[in-house]
Amino acid sequence: MSYGGYTQLPSGSIDHEHRQQQVVTNTYNVLQSTSESIARSTQVALQTENIGAEVLGELGEQRESLLRTTRRLEDADQELSKSRIIIRKLRHEVLYNRIVLILIIILELGILIGLLVLKFAHL
Image 1 (tube, rainbow, N blue to C red):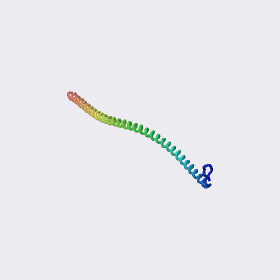
Image 2 (cartoon, helix red, strand yellow):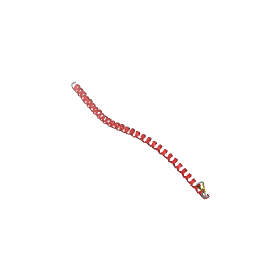
Image 3 (cartoon, helix red, strand yellow):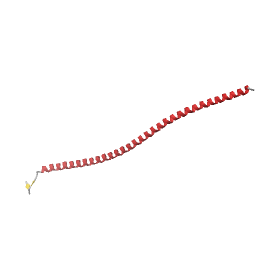
Image 4 (cartoon, one colour):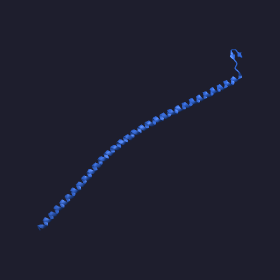
């Protein structure tokens, strides 16, 4: 049948159209939910990227700090090596000076004993 150019569909097609409408509505809802989920995932990814960039920057600063500390420790180690050499030289010089001082004392004692012997031998 036809009314004003429209054809009336059998009553069974209304159920079919209703089911198609539900499928379209459900599909739209799923797409909407998926779009929202993708938007949230994108936001989380951007936040994660920002956090990663901050961590990377901090790690770079810490690396530079560690390199400076390493250089300072190497410099300190070189200075300690120089100090050890100087202390070793001073120790040798102190020992040498003690030996020279002992020899001078022995020489003075020898001279003193020699003078005493000469003085008492002439008496």
